[in-house]
Image 1: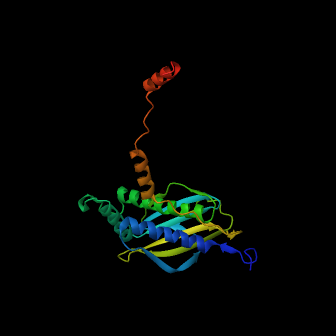
Image 2: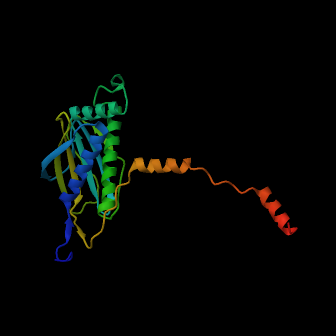
Image 3: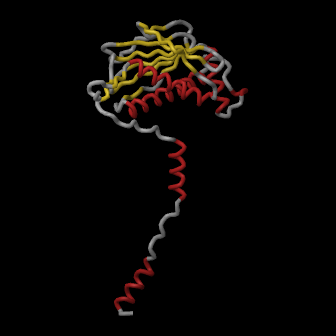
Length: 230
């Protein structure tokens, strides 16, 4: 059958799977621990920030949506400490409470990397463009129902359970406009750029010797000799 008779459709669950893979990829690399998620996904009626740490980010463009990650204090501290120790920090220099600004800043940065990876995959694999705002991270002591104007006309919401290397739990929630991407013709998705390769290429370019500048004096002398027939 032709592509038009049997089109490839990329829907809400596919977007959610792509986002979940970005979460596991970024957090696994950042913390050097195995992050995984449940094979079951929940349909939910609304998204909300919950204790102990909640983070949300909006995106807009080809489609609009809202991403929330709710961390337990144990999960947040495990990820924070693993990330900072992996960056070479001393354990004595780490924050001791999940309510610390340092913990919120680090978790916000990790969230930013997660959504950035997802945005890049959307651009390469779905050939559309979305933009994100700066993630907002809040330490909470009670549930907060988040109501944000994300320009969602037909919102669909999903929740996925994640587990850290020490089996502490956190949750990802996605609210998105009901949408489907239908593949009109075959194409090869662009490969993700390799930062190490780009850095090495830049170093080679900067280390390459500059072409020698022509000797102006020698050139003038040659012209004079030619004009004298020598």
